[in-house]
Length: 247
Image (cartoon, rainbow, N blue to C red; front, side, top):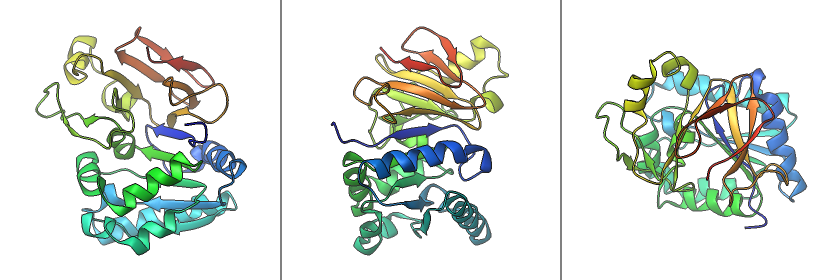
């Protein structure tokens, strides 16, 4: 696990100028681990959206890569059939930053798990590529994806990078305004599962430097908002530059 790349759980703001400093750090960390200066976009979570919307995400991501003087690569992976394509999976090799953007987290996990594309992502990340998930991407990295409509403790299967972690993105927009007793209904989870809320334009990042560790679930906060520990550790809100560990 010594060569595992950095990983960012982003509340919102993929490809926006406000998140460029973090994206630049993720790229540089991977380049320092021998990876190429390539910014790979995987829009699968938005695969059911309109063609015009997908074009919007593509252009936004390519501008983000250009802003960082990185080679932007938009992979047209919109469904499970696309994720099975070896030619698309091969373009993930040695990328500096692999970015799973927003949309539907359940659709993302179900479409990606067990495919050549997901295998390529895991191989690249475990050998030093940085991996970021924004909104749906961040949610899908957990052991399961919560179902807020059913409000049950067990969600649908996730990608299982963090088996004991649930991430709730856009926390300040959708949940931060709720009374505590109502919010707790939405963060119910099985015993042993940590639940964090990540504000918009904010990220929880591990593996970026020696201070943060995937193995220890030790993260640093980046961005203008906060990361809220909601369940499974002492309830607290952490801000820019602060480090937290999920025990």
